[in-house]
Length: 82
Image 1 (cartoon, rainbow, N blue to C red):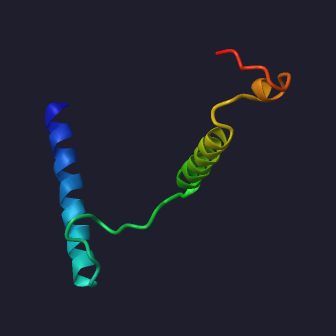
Image 2: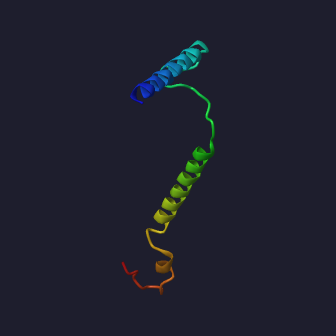
Image 3: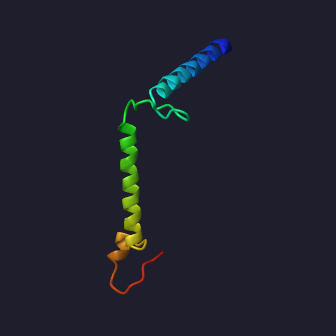
């Protein structure tokens, strides 16, 4: 099993270097990382939506100065309980 694992790893590394050479010959900037196309963008889009939601929540928190809806619905002039 150990030998097979080593052979598979060597094959993957060889494939990576062959692909890097192809990209460099094609004029792509592959000195540091391969420039392979993305297989799927679903996860990237989901993470972008989540990041936007976090920014929106943070901006809302800042705008309300950390008070909750309960605090804002309390009687005027009363201090919020913390």
